[in-house]
Image (tube, rainbow, N blue to C red; front, side, top):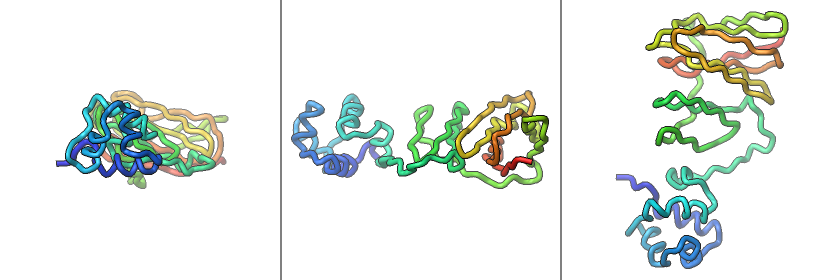
Length: 197
């Protein structure tokens, strides 16, 4: 059985911060013997200490639980490198410009893989004055629908949430070359390149 926090994670993070077991113990009001027990796997921190422990180690609670720290090495963020995280429980849509640990409804979400659209999920893009009119020829029933359509350029992301029994299209003000992302609740996330006329 996997435990919610591993001793190895605590030890690595403590050492990265240059802290002794005693220094860490003092920061979270426990004994250095308690920290030693955690690090050797002979015990685990009480759940009431997790937030304080994460703060002392300089990471988020989610990072502490996952055992992975997230360092943003994306010096100049580019929205075209963005990723989507979609909660299977509530349908929440989260867009991140870099590597992230995302949690929703009590679960850690994986970055959603992007597929090339098949014939049943092709986009229709019309140019109407200064807008793209984007539609997907797709049913919009309560069981099978397009959940959202997003337009990403190098500096902006615009997400439009769609709903069952509604329309499967939206309009975006033309901002330049980029990608249209869209999500089918049965077939996943797809994207299509979009260019100015």
